[in-house]
Image (cartoon, rainbow over all chains, first blue to last red):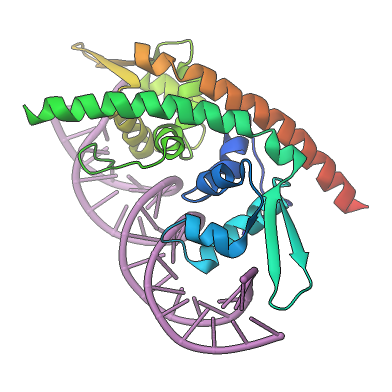
Length: 117
Length: 117
DNA sequence: CGGCATCCTTTCGGATACTG
DNA sequence: CAGTATCCGAAAGGATGCCG
């Protein structure tokens, strides 16, 4: 678990990557970008994620102040996840990453075609 | 080693993080942002990096078309690394990451102070 | 000087079973 | 439904020694 007391960042880029990096966080944030989602819904949107991982990633995002966890004391239980106001400030960053990724994927595709010849 | 033949990305954000992510790549790119640097110079700018790691990261960036490696056939050998034209397109993305990281580090610092009380 | 080869430790993530 | 707990393998990263 990432610990706010001990985790130190010297470079601001690393700090950001520490928050949104990893295999699942970008996808989780992407799905929460404009929706409030339940645990199970998220799990269905992330094919292959184990409950352990989903919980872990959500907890870390929560600790970092990015995601809000709202629990309803019902039976069966219902828990909804959403972006905090601060969490929403990261959306433009994600979109910048996505846009560059698209052009990169194009170029990579071209290179792979060339290698076949 | 990352292999262009086998590595697949479904999400453009992941694709970008695959290129600039990891412990050292952001720092390497940050230093190459506006300078052409030799292997040894880079190593000195990255305290604690092992030669193995530095080489590995540089090769991957080279394979991804981000970094240019220019070798001079001299003795002693000299190798200079720089951003390719395509590599330079990622600078604004890095700066977006850095800027968000700064505000995040501020907020985190405040939270740590509160926890002390 | 600019690496590569080898070995080792640490971290990340996956699989599965179980529970309030 | 929304998680925990436990165990395991894969991958990232570190330390060190050697070489053209």
